Image (cartoon, rainbow, N blue to C red; front, side, top):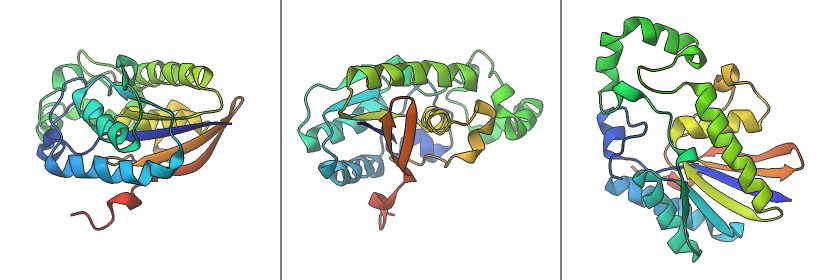
Length: 206
């Protein structure tokens, strides 16, 4: 049996400021680093053999905390695990965008899977690139436990696919907070959820 552990990066500066990150980046906050370390400690007993990350620094830095804590070898990164690219919106404040693009956000709030952001991606494209990569990981590391660090929306779309839902059903899966933990067991084509969107390791953290 192959076990896949999926998580999101720790809190960043732009998370706090309410800015769109997407393919751009902002550094982990002190809290974000502590979140990553807390998750790493929680993962001590999971017998993780390999760790992969998005090539965005916020994900790499989160994955490095896990790698060091668990004494793993080299961290591998891939653009396939990047966050949904929001194109021209990246770096902007979400609330200001809502006021500037009311029509797009009206659709985003009801049918986000139909939205392609200006100069950016859509949910179907993001899910396909990330899922195709995840399928490769499952084939390469059969019978092992692998940890992958990605981003909020990309992670949610991966979990949605793993649970057998279509892109437009993405709201049926839990939101992925910073360092949320997901553990799934893979048997052939079957994905069995063990833990989804769990943040118990952050209990007591302000």
